[in-house]
Length: 255
Image (cartoon, rainbow, N blue to C red; front, side):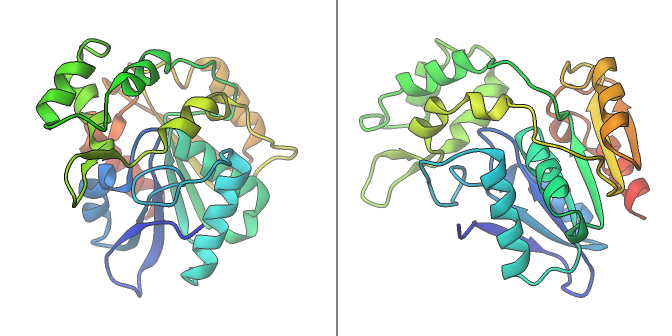
């Protein structure tokens, strides 16, 4: 799986890999990545079936953890710091459970290892309803998607998954058929049979319900060296809503 990535910062610095969440792509983290690249060698990576990375009929956390292992080995990265948001957070947790010796530190943004019920039905319904082959403009796509998703910011984020083809017309970057068919994989609890020793920071938003009190108790049980920081006023999209607070939390943990 030859994952697409963007690389920022000096190669002599400590490597940091950032993984986006569901329906996201590496460019979502570009602003924060640039700030972190002042001291770190940053890799912003598209996970399989997202962004400009290859599509695959296979889609689960064990495979995405293997993709991350292959990426680290291919680029000869020595014990990188790994950061993941939401789905990306579960990927990095699974990777650390499988290959703890390959990680120096881990940052998990607004997700826990537990099971999450499917809650993306409306998004998937809206995206699948878009006549991608006949859409002429992004404005047209936005108008059609608004029938399902009234929030402009959420629509803008989702519509980053369409691109204009060289021959004209639009196409999906995200592998919509596979994600639709296998959406339950995204919410599955992780396969963790032992406590993870990798120093770990969980960052959540107080306006999000992804990390609750019961989740913090489970996190403390499954991670031997862990801290949990909740950012006041942030929802699930911590990096978009409270970027400076997130940057401060990350820097305090790393340096």
